[in-house]
Length: 181
Image 1: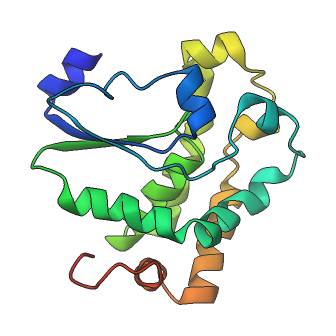
Image 2: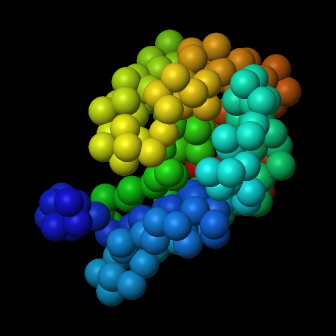
C-alpha cells in the first residue's frame, strides 16, 4: 500500500490521530524521507478506552466541539495543505470517519460541493469501515461510534452556517486568510 500511494504521487501525510493512537499504531510514513509528515491531533484524548466508554450520543456534539475547540489545529491542517509540495495529500485518522470527515466536509464546503453530496460522502464511511480488516477484528460493528448517521454531518453543517454564515467564514475565524483559502 505504501508503494501504491507513493506511485500515486503521495507527497504529504496529515495524521489527525492523538499521541496514544500513534503509540498503538504508528504511522508508516513518519520516517519516510520522501514524504512530508504532519501530526495534528483533532482529539487529544482519543484512545480506545476513552471512546468505548463514551455515551451513545457522543458524536452528536463531538463534531461541533471539535470545530470550536480545535480552531488552531484546523488552521494548522489547512496551513499544511497550503504549504504541501506538489503532489497528493493524504489526511486520515483512525477510522477515516470523524476527524477525517470533518476536514473533508470543510474542504468540500470550501469549494461549494452541495451539502447533500458532503453528507452522502460521510454516510458511506460506515459501509467502508465494515469492510476494513482491522475494524472487523477489533471493533463491534454495531457500536454507535462507528455509525455515520447523516444527521451528525447535517447538524454540523447547519451549525457552521448558523454561527458563521459559511464554511469559508468558519475557516477565516481560525486565522486563515482569504489568500490561503
